[in-house]
Image 1 (cartoon, protein in one colour):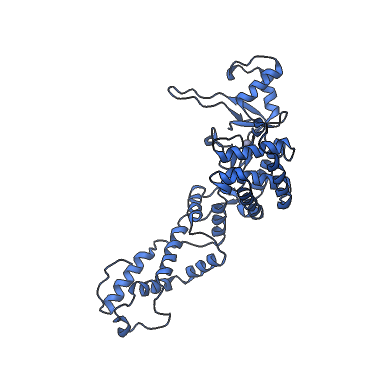
Image 2: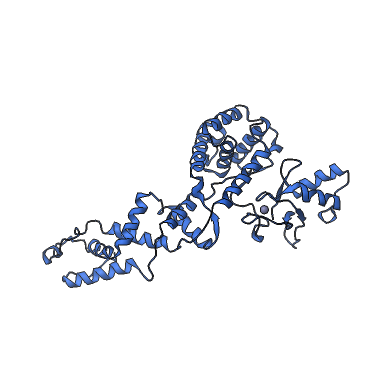
Length: 377
Ligand SMILES: [Zn+2]
């Protein structure tokens, strides 16, 4: 249930109030409240407006529920007949009043950076480089890509911790006896003998298959141990069993969008000066738009950008009343999730590597009469 809808007759994204004011002028009738919308207007809205997520028609205006002591919610649109297409971001009740995380309001002007992007968008529309229609078309393109390439989340959310424990054990085994060398009483008597490392190495020998998995992850350069890896873990938990967009189908588009966003962030003064630079969602959304309209040709997109940047600064701000799209929201985390899922690694039940390492060390020390472990491994 979106707050804005796309008008086919007046291409652009508008909220309930903006649309009713326009209809009032168009039909020459005053507009008093959302409760008293004439039937002719309602009929018009059903045909004219499209859901910003899946582009169905059949819009109805929904009055905000009045809450005492609180500012009432803004009116929004409902699409019940024929209803949203499957996998529309606005299809669930939770999104009644929220902008989906991958949508970017280009009318946003809260920071210097978003104001600068808004100015670029308005200038681009004024110059005819793109239009509200192309911005809408890009969202539709993405929606179709999404529903064509759905993948069910099956990644075990415990995998991240399991692999982190393994990784730590591998790291901890540095400096242990090489495989095949017997630990003798003479070696064990060395004052600096590293019992932690020896215990870690012996425990790791039990998990040959998993060490092979770790090697594969390293070879494929899956960056699973950073923040994006943690995020992938929580996405796996939250979306377990659900069909989601497979981000790997857009890997080429993602690479180009990041390059363009970096270029723009470094070579355009208003963005260079604004904190946040190229990484912010509005710059990514704007870059993706420039690429989309040029069939993902980065040379053409940069030429368009140079043209827009040369005259930006005096545009009609109302043109920015449009909802852009950052197709790469959480992209790294989704990609890690998909890559990890494809490896089909099974997390063993009831295994605690750290406890195993400690138990092993206690046992080894006892066997060789070494002093008991003081600091845990
Ligand atoms: Zn929809």
